[in-house]
Amino acid sequence: MIQDAGAHFLSHPAALLAAGNYGRSGGGEMIAYLGVAVVAIAVVCVGAYLASRLVHQRRFNNDGTLFSGLCAVHALDRSARRLLVEVAGHRRLSQRARLFTDPRWLDPATLRGPIRRRANEVDALRRRLFS
Image (tube, rainbow, N blue to C red; front, top):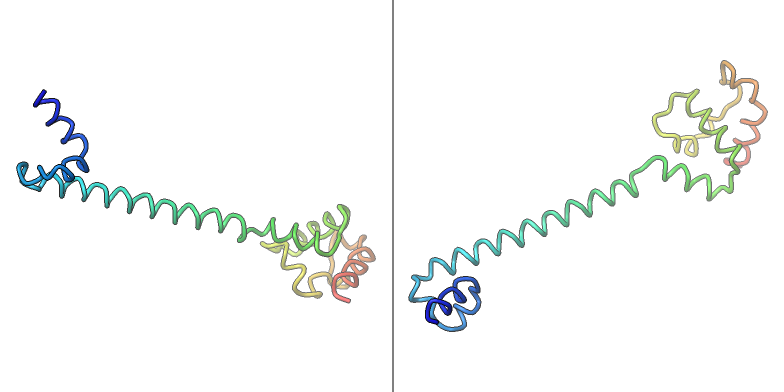
């Protein structure tokens, strides 16, 4: 029975502290438990912070999400979106959303290659976005 009580106190440091028996084991054991608890809480907090930052970056620092949002705000249909993607590829833009920042990206006079055939559509889209 006495051995069971000792095992109980060793497995439950709070019970050991509440019973006032911490002095008998030297107190070092209780400090070790508290140290482990503090480290565990710190690890959980740092992990939660890093996970939150990662989710935020993926959600808000994403060219695809920004491009889709800008297309939605301007009420662009699927064909206009495809045209913008094609122009972004032609201009070798790393971020398609940059097309919404400067009308020169959509200047039909500077188009070369196969996309030049769609110059009228590009010009109409430019006037729609920047008028």
